[in-house]
Length: 66
Image (cartoon, rainbow, N blue to C red; front, side, top):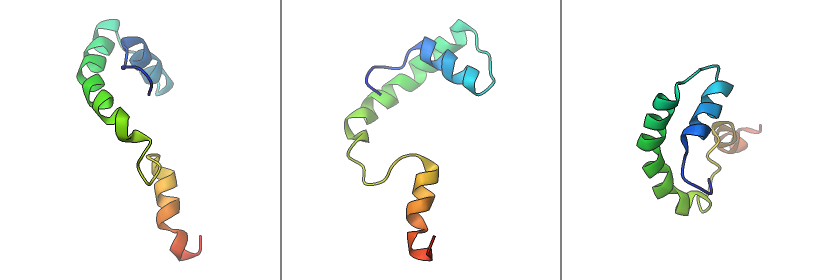
């Protein structure tokens, strides 16, 4: 993520999950979550495993012949 989380981004993400949020609720979510995402941003590209869960399972199962 290159910039801090915005209420608009929260609304779009929620809509892709089938949820409709009011602008006020989206702003509350963005305000609550943005500091954690901003703090994580400097190390997000340096982790040895991808953060996407399916990729994690694939890496874990490499020794199982999959």
